[in-house]
Image 1: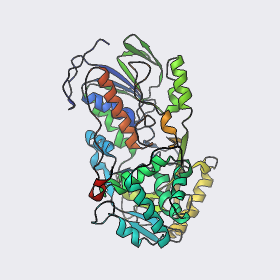
Image 2 (image 1 turned 90 degrees about the horizontal axis):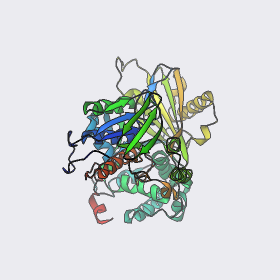
Image 3 (image 1 turned 90 degrees about the vertical axis):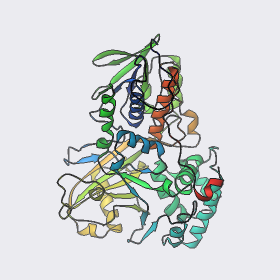
Image 4 (image 1 turned 45 degrees about the vertical axis):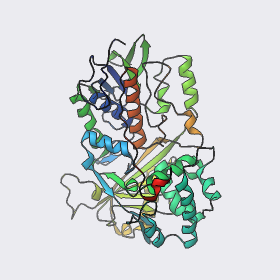
Amino acid sequence: MNTTLKQNGSAPSSGAVSTRVRVAIIGGGLAGLAAGCALSDAGYSVTLYERRPYLGGRASSYEHPGTGEVVDNCQHILLGCCTNLIEFYRRLGVQDRIKWYECLTFIEPGGRSGILEPSGLPAPFHASMAFLKFPLLATSDKLAVARAMLSLMERTPPDDGSDFQSWLLKHGQTQRAIDRFWSPVLVSALNEDLDQVSVYYGAMVFRDAFLKSAEAGRMGVPTVPLSDLYGTARGYIEARGGEVSLRTSVESFRTEGDEVIVSTAGGESTFDFVIPAVPFHALGALLPKTKASEDIVAGLEHLKTVPITGIHLWFDREITPLEHAVLLDRTVQWMFQKSKIQSRPGQDDQNAGSYLELVVSSSKTLLNKSRGEIIDLALRELAEFFPVAKEAKLLKATVVKEVHATFAPAPGSDQYRLRPQSPWPHVFFSGDWTATGWPATMEGAVRAGYATAEAVANATGEARRFMVPDLPARGLMKFFK
C-alpha cells in the first residue's frame, strides 16, 4: 500500500490521514454503515456500494407497491445495553428518533394483562416488585424463574454445545414459565426457538439486558421508518469526502499487490482495502477463486438462517390504546402500534385509524403459508387479545417475510464465525455474523462494523478505538463478573 497514516490516538477527526487511504465497503447494512461512518470520520476515503436503492440492509423500509405505504421490512428494537448502536445514533445525530419504554405489557388470550417494569430497588432486583405481582404466572412458576435467575447472576455459562431449553429444564423451569417468560423474551431477541439456541446466548440476553441494571433493559423503538433512520449515514459519509453508490452491485474483487480491484457493472475501481459487509451466505460469490475462499465458504455452511415475518394491518379505528405488547400463547408474539409510535406527515390523531405491525420471530411455520392465510391467522389471534378488532374494518394489509433475517445462534455456532482479518492482508470481513460475541442484532452489526474499522486502521499502522464499552453493572450486580 502506498499510503501512510499519522499516529494520533483514538479521537476521530477528519483529515487524520496524511494520504487518504481508499476503502471500499460492499453492503449498506448496519455493519457496512458503521464501518463507513467510523472510517470516514477518521479521515479515510470511503466508497460504499449498495445494490438496493436504500440503506439499512435487513433493517430498512420501502414503499410497498400493494398498499402505497412505507413499511419496515420488520420491526426492529434495541435495548439500553446496546451501547455501540446508541453511540452510532449519536454519531449520525438521530438519537432523538428513538422512543424509550421502561415497561413491558404481556397479554394472554382473553385480554388479561401483566406489566414488568423497574422499581427503585438495586439491580438485579429492580424488576422484582412487578414480577411478584405479575398475574400471568403462578407462584410455582415465579419461584422457578427466581432460582434460574440466581444462577445467572453468578456468571454467563459458556457455550458447551447444549441448548438453552435444556438448561432451563435442568434448572427446574415449569412449562408455563418457559412459555410465558423465557420464550417471549428470547425468541424475540434471538429469533430462534429455545431448543436451537446456544446456552451462552440465551443466558447472555437475560444477564446483560435484564439483570445488570434497569437502564440495560429499557426498550427503544424507532419513531421513523428504518431507511429514514439509517439513510442519514449517506450524508455523513459524503460530508467527509466519501461516496455512497446506491443501485450498484459488486460482482467480485481481487487483490493485486498492495491494492484491491473491485468490479461492478460499471467497470473496475482500485482501493487500498475492501470490506465485504454482506450476509455470510452471499460472501462466497464475491471472494477470489482460491483454496482459501473454498475453506471459508465450507466453514460458513455450518451457519444457518432463520426467518422473521411482519404482518402489517391498517384499521379504520383504534384497536388498543397500547403502543406495544407481548402476545402470549399464540403464533403472533408482538404487537406494535405504528400509528402511535411513528409520527407521519398529515396524520390526524382523531381520524387516522390504527396501523399495527404484528411480529412472528423464528417464523418457520409461516414460510409456506400464503399472504391471505397469514393475514387471516393474524386477525383471528388479534381478536383474542383485543376484541375491538372484530368490529373494526380492515382497510389494507400486507405480509413481509424476511426469509434470511438472522443467523441462528445455535450451540457451537461461534466457532464458524469469522474475525475481521482474512487470508488477504487488504480484505476485512464485516457483518453481524462475524465474531462479535453478540447474536444477530443491530448492536451486533454495529459492533462488527466498528471492529472491522479498527482492524483496517491497525493494518495502516494507526491504533484506533471505535467500539465503546458495555454498560457497567449496577447495584449488587457490581459484585459479579
